[in-house]
View 1: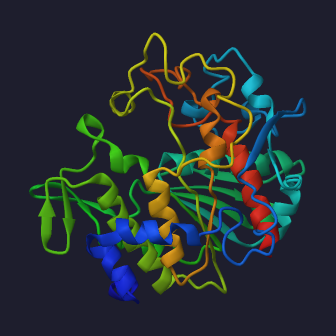
View 2: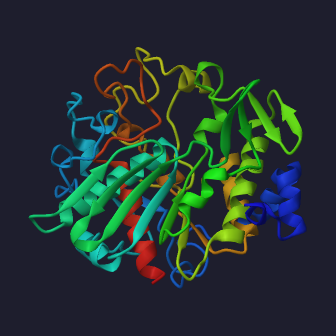
Length: 374
């Protein structure tokens, strides 16, 4: 593991020791906004700029027929009365997105492992892909499902394909010690479990911002220095630098493709509301049934956390594709569970996404990216 955390350049050393934000801003423009480094189509088509168009054939699957959907994402089962949010298809401005072919995916990734590593937004995308493939598998499909902490898996037995979720809020470690729960910005002891996967899709961001009762750590630690707190964007950058160094030192690109999910936006009225999860009489995503607008503008300002992600990827020696879902997802205030998060759940969820729904578009784009990179 020491080798995995060794920094291979002075730039990554500056990232790890707190100068990341300035370097990231300078590097952000170096990351392609479409298909990722090494993509032949990146110059001609940005898959993440476009519009949402009505499509009567959608959704791609019926969530009630997918055995992997947790209650918290199954908005229709939880009583959501409207269905327009299910009937929207993402259409890039500069090209036609290839039709998602789940059977082709199953055959192309036969004998392999696709692993999502991250928080509950990774769970959102993992469940979506599992349902898309389940709907495409010829009957009678032999599928096994195991649910655990931190690993859950859907295995398509006829194709020897495993679609795995490794749940990790921060990618770096949170460790229980005598003084409390410590978020270790430069430690990734669990990372060896990710080796051997043929596709790794990483994500982290939202848990770095939480405070109060939603905060799951008591201290941060970097090296021998312990902090009560620090600027959350700076700590996120330090943690992501640890991840980037591990990927560069440990991932065999002849075996494994690496994707970063990008930043999934929330639609709360305030950061305090996001932490509390309280359901208001109005505002946020409550009772929203239409997108904010149907098309991206093409000149959206990047959130600071997006700048960190783009710059970190640009600094890496390992090719990492950015699934840059922020702008297209920002339009979809209608696609959250809102108050339809399931039995026993109070408050409002404007962070996650209904299944079926928006994450299907993320996986549709991911499929196109993988086709382009084959």
